[in-house]
Amino acid sequence: MRSLRSPGAGRARATRTAAAALSLATAALLAGCASADPSSGSGDSSPAAAKDFQRAGQKEGSRITVWADSTRLPSVQAYQKAHPDTKMKIVTYDGGADGSTYLQSKVQLFDRTGKGWPDVVFGSPTDVTWASQPTKPGAQPFAAPLDDKLVPQETLDGFAKGSLTPCEFNGHTYCLRNDIAQVVLWYNKPLMDKWGYKVPTTWEEYEALGEKVGKEHPGYLVGSVGDTNSHESYFWSTKCPAYQLTELDTLRSDLSDKNCTRTAKLLDHLIDAKAVTTKGFFSQGFAKNSGDKVLMAYGPSWYGQYLFKTAFKVPSKTMAVAPPLKWEGESTAATGNVGGGVWMVSSHSANLKASTDLATWLTTSDENQAAAPTYPAYTKAAQAWLKNPANSSYFAGDVSEVFRSAADAVWTGWSNTRFPDATAWSNAVLPELTEGKSLTSVLPDWQKEISNEAKADGYQVTNE
Image (cartoon, rainbow, N blue to C red; front, side):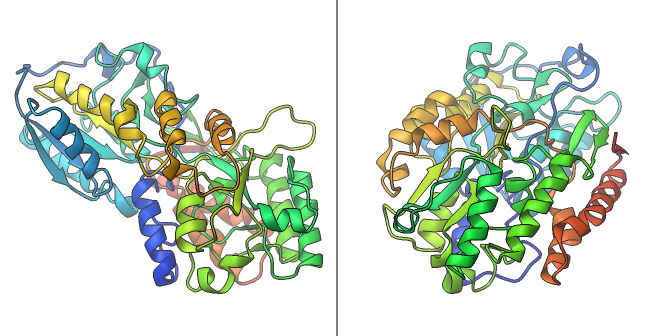
């Protein structure tokens, strides 16, 4: 999920089944679970980084070096097979797993020695925060500005609304989004029908139904706040400004905002009703003990295949999906994003043509993305993905329209920062919830932890 930071990272080891599902999910969603979408275009409207982009001496036909994680390895190999004239050296690395800084450390080394940079890399959105900036004065950012005569604007315009925001800094685009993990409402259709429950469309209806479930069907759940990415499903979806870049090095974080406090209050009510659990879906024993008791879950698009099917082993034609929730009085819904990786092309590549073609094919081609493990960020490729029975036949009904609309509704006000957003939630919030404290009461602790992390990473922090 994002920087392959697993939802259960730093917590008890999950059951063998859940861990297997999580491993698949995190690998598929690299960059998903971290702080996934950054604000774009902060700073100078005619950025020095892009103006100073100096192409290396080009040697068309020269071999390119590609770094990919194990999940994306088959896709890179498929490209090589389909393009035998393209000379490639493929290296498997962690892809940013668990917040790894391996890529950044190696690039810093290559910058010092003046050689060794890979031509194309898969990584997390967090990687773009440093790869789009010079590592030292006078240096060139590792990532090439793809909108500078490398990728046609028509192609860039073909990605889901806002999905390239993690790639955009100083007015330029430094990566192509591989996949996204838009948050939707999952529900057990046979049980909802049996009990006569109406699928909620607003947060208020969700709260009322959850309290009703707690009374009428004790033990059944409508959600969880116990995983290291739960805040992205709930607080990101309700437009809580926990991580909002106003400038490249200025972070606005205001958990006293009403969108934060009313979300916490709603969840506190559902926790008190025992309809939302403080145990993580991926925590030890959850799949075995409670996996069949999840009536609803507010979470990413990959929950269908990797949580319900693989981890919980919910029978086919059971789980259905509904659009993201909105508050009463709001005309449109926003949603969060819990995953999604990116491809970057090195600004030092001696074969930008082949490197760009590879990155473009990996992210936009039906041939590759129709069989991808998670929802493609490129709109046309997503249509092919949805038509693949492997991605749709498990569900109780057609998920296409909900997935498509939610992909365009991800709120871009939750920014990608140089540090992962899971750490503060895991350190300041989850232990307190386990001890029985309310979300509302720990918002100040969460705020302080975010501020401390941001300042340690060089950000100025404001709550205004």
